Figure 1: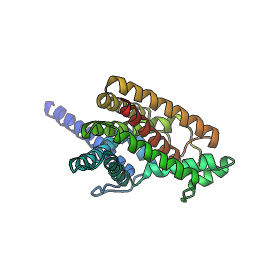
Figure 2 (figure 1 turned 180 degrees about the vertical axis):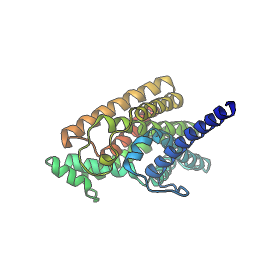
Figure 3 (figure 1 turned 90 degrees about the vertical axis):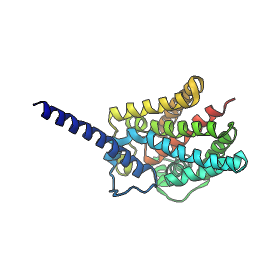
Length: 265
């Protein structure tokens, strides 16, 4: 009987670890272009359930960017150049997933005259004036904030915090805001489970508090909440809900908010 209990316990632990590994793999496949051995296509509902792991994947992307900045710093490149190379690498790792969402959202929300026109513009793969302006501003703010930091250690902490915390917003956003379309990835995914939302938020909050310290960490957390509220209000007013593009735009706003908080002297 005791042997059966030990076997059951071991199986339960293996199942639990297997579930965590699976969720991390799902988010890695969805949110990055990093090759995953024996990968299979993932569906929207699977992504929603595994969304708690998005901050973990974000932290990994931030660490990759930090390594690039450290190498650039080691070779004596100016901070602006090092920060630019860092963003080039992090954007490449994610396939510009969130940058594309920001550009499409800006074009749609500010370029369309009504809800239907805005949604149609957001589905257009071409970039317009609003999208180009929003993307340029995002890059300039993030590069400038990183270049203003003291050195590789500060940059590494800021990158991990910003990438993790910005992605921690997404499960809550997708759960709190109704979908604007009846089709698309956001519609297929549905609302993430409450447990995934809570765990993602906790991971994001821990990341900013540890990386930036209590003062800047709290400031970052408040800025992230303000970003979530502002994007929620804007998309509800303009298109009646959220889409995958709007979620990508929110991630970009979240990154900027944390990096600006980290850059405050």
